[in-house]
Image 1 (cartoon, rainbow, N blue to C red):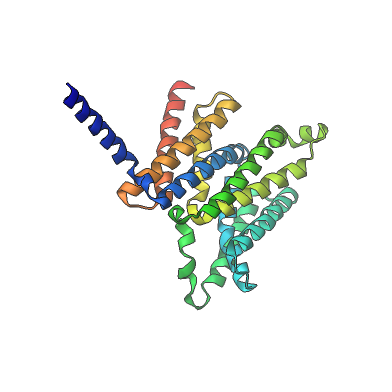
Image 2 (spheres, rainbow, N blue to C red):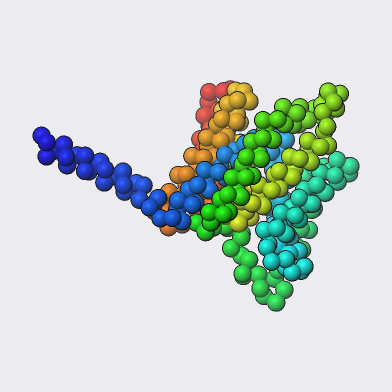
Length: 286
C-alpha cells in the first residue's frame, strides 16, 4: 500500500508539474503577471464602454496608436510609448469634444477620425518601406514584457481602481442621463473626459503586448458576455472581470502548449464565452 500510495502521489505531482511547467520560465511568469493586471482592467473598463456604446471609441483609440508612433518618428521622439500615450490622450479628448457638438452620430464621427488616423499613421510609417519594423504592434507580444513594464501596468491598475471607487457612480449617472446628472451638479464634461483619458492610457499601455487588431475585442467581449447573464450591476462587474481573467490566463497557457500567438488565443476563448453566455441568457433569462 505504501509503494502504491507513493506512486499515486508521484504521478499526481508529475501531472501538476506538467500543467504548470510553463511557469518555470521568467518570460512566462512576467506574461502571467501582466495578464493578471491587464485582464481585470479590461473587465472593469469594458463594462462602462459597453454600457455607453463606446465600442467604436475604444477601437479608434487602438488605431490611433499607429499615428502616435508616426508622430514620434516625425519629431524624433526616442520613446514611442510616450508619443503614443500623448497622442491618444489628445485624440480621445478631441473625439469627446467633437462628438458632443456635431449633429452627426457619434459612430460616424468616430469612424471618420479612426479612418483618417490609421491612414495617416500608415502613410508616414510606410515611407521608404520601413513599416515592417512596426508590424509587430498589430498583433502584440505579451511574452516580451519586462518587469519595469509590469510596474507601469500596476500603476495604471491602481489609478483605475481609485477612479472606479470614487467616480463610478457619477460616471454611471452621466451615462444614463446627462441632463439629470447635470441637475445633480455632477461635472459631466469632466467625468467624460477623465474616462476617455483613462481608457486611452490603458489602451496605449497595453497595446504593444495585446496588439492593435484585437485590443478592442478584449475590452468588449468579457463585458458583453457578462451583460448576457447579469441581473444587476454587481454581477455585471463580477462576471466581466471573471471572464476576462479566465480567458486571459487560460489563453496564455494554451498558447504556450499549442505554440500560437497569445492575444488571438485569448480573444478566441473570450468569443466562445460570449456565445455560451448569449445562448444561456436567451434560455434562462427570457
